[in-house]
Length: 451
Image (tube, rainbow, N blue to C red; front, side):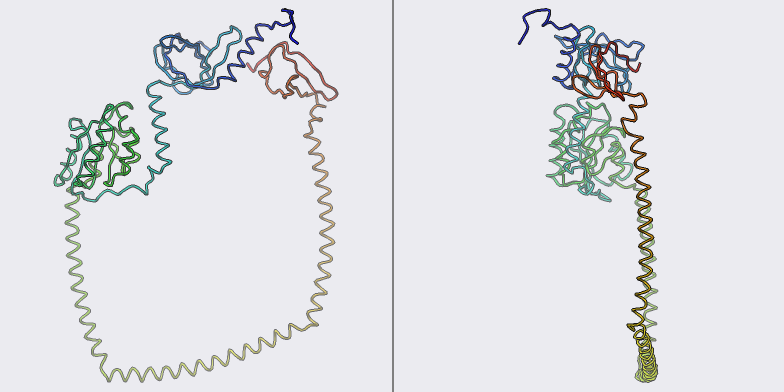
């Protein structure tokens, strides 16, 4: 029954703030908050205090030193950020605040998470698997380039192709490589190259830039089109340190557009040298084949002479004498083996005599009885020794023995939870301490932390 006396029904301000803090922390959970930094301060403790605001509201936030990762010093007033953490209440002042666990720039952080999510999704589908990727042709008959016709990438690609192997024709499929329309134009250019069937390898790429500049090559639909393309594709987006989804789904990833051009064609000088080497090897193989044919003719001539009727009769007569000698030797060997086998059988029969078997069994039984007695005594001794050791070990780790040495088990009076840290209670809480003999119930007057 609720009391009508205000003094009896009232709670303290500390109790009110503690209840509100519990409601906030248990009801809200962890979440991402986007806003602009203001009133940022860095006291000597290393903690960072700030406000996050938008056009119509602001909230206080604290980023404790233990939670800071990476170059936290780079953040300043006016930066737009994404902060991840939990909502809590500072009991001493009654102000609610965001306890930050992670903070990153708003724009790049969102794109990075979208990139990681798409990468994980396509990887789970097997779009990055090496066994589905196509090899590049050794010497393509025609090379297709999907990029901006006015960018630096096409100039670098054409320059390298002209230097390494100018005889291979190049077809340019123009498309925007930056902006909202870029993914659609890249897919249209790719579809055009597939329908025309005039190239046996494609290069798709652009020059370097920021994550936002390269974002067209992280489009999911474009990635699926690249993965399904029947023509081998080399992805050449940005610099060597830049990675896009197109790099992972393409058949080959090149560090730069110039590197892609070097991959799709061989070096002309090296190729011509290889042709010269192959010509020399073919000439040598032909000369060797002529020499082998000449030797074969000589061998066939000698074989023809050896196949005359007189030579055949001599060989057959020699073979008949040789076979007769082998037959006589085999018969003698067979008789000897049968005699030895008969002698071994007689010896085994003697060893299987019942009298010998009974004598051996009696001796084995006596030995087994002696071993069994010895083993039983040793097993009983070992078991007794282990029981004694386990008893001493159990007594040494007994909680009651620990209490006898002056320690106590402290529990929360209300919940019964064992307390291991001073921060688990607050001033005014009741605790129960179990001693070696009896228990104590006490009220906490002061909480002293690790500091």
